[in-house]
Image 1 (cartoon, rainbow, N blue to C red):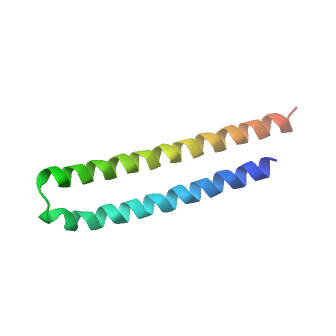
Image 2: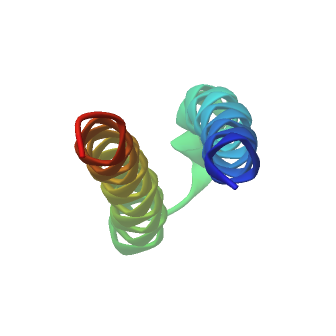
Image 3: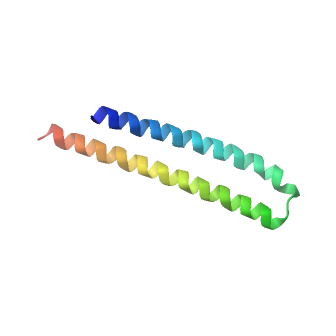
Length: 80
């Protein structure tokens, strides 16, 4: 059971990392693409990308907390 949870956590972590890399690449490419837009549109795109990155960072934190709780639960069961 612990192995399945750990594999699931690792899988979710990999998906989040790939998502972060994609978002970072899109953000980098939008910097040049938004040069022709007005200031409000450019600011809205930048804010949307920042919020998306914050969501991915929150996902990283949840994965880290899940792995820590899983390790603690495993240690408790080992020493019982």
